[in-house]
Amino acid sequence: MTHIRVINPNTALEMTESIGRCARAVVSSSTEVTAVSPAMGPESIESHYDEALAVPGLLAEIAAGERAGVDAYVIACFGDPGLDAARELAAGPVLGIAEAAMHAATMVGRTFSVVTTLARTTGRAWELAHRYGFAAACRGVHACEIPVLDLEKPPARAAVTELCASVAERDGSDVIVLGCAGMADFCAEVTRATGVPVIDGVAAATRFAESLVALGLRTSTRGEYARPLPKRYTGLLRDFTI
Image (cartoon, rainbow, N blue to C red; front, side, top):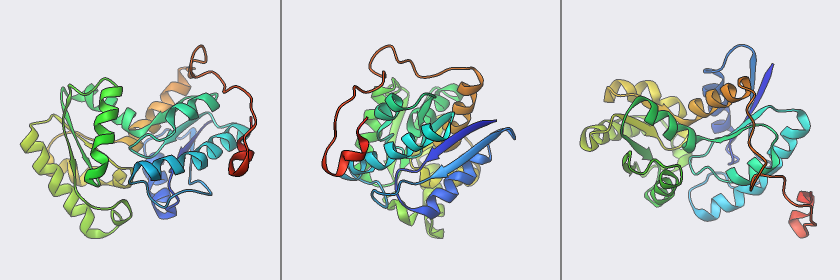
């Protein structure tokens, strides 16, 4: 049996449960999905400060997963925080949901638009589009101006759906990418409203991770994703000593 650990890097447990349901819905019956949140970190990730402070807890979950024999990991935050560091620690594949969503979008269309939460996070989405090689395919990154923790409230679903429909028409994009793990279960409504493929990065990353394990593929350790060099960490980070 394949075991995938989906890590919500914030500490909002209701969101973690929702993310877990969306991940389990797309895997085969022989794959186990465990959705977890770190024991420490911000309750939502909406700034560079939040993202930086989410990474230690995220890496602790990767380390715990390695001890438990987890086969692959999904980082369920659209900023893909700590992705490179997680790949240094994990034996199996580690996927970020922005990375997976952008890959999936370009497999089913030539162009895509991202609909995310707050405007202050749009720069990070553009940065990742450039890093992953998809900047030319990205027609726009648009903010609904709804905080992450408010996405679970009923008005948020309607507002995000309405914005996605407007963006699809305005940008003329082939695909809509949902730019937050908290939007993971919005796909059906947004698809009906836009008439175009809608990508949830949680589902895409989980299914890709399952496929990579089935193919026997792991992250290369030849270069910068090699195991971190042993050294001592002090203070609050002393437990992270390798």
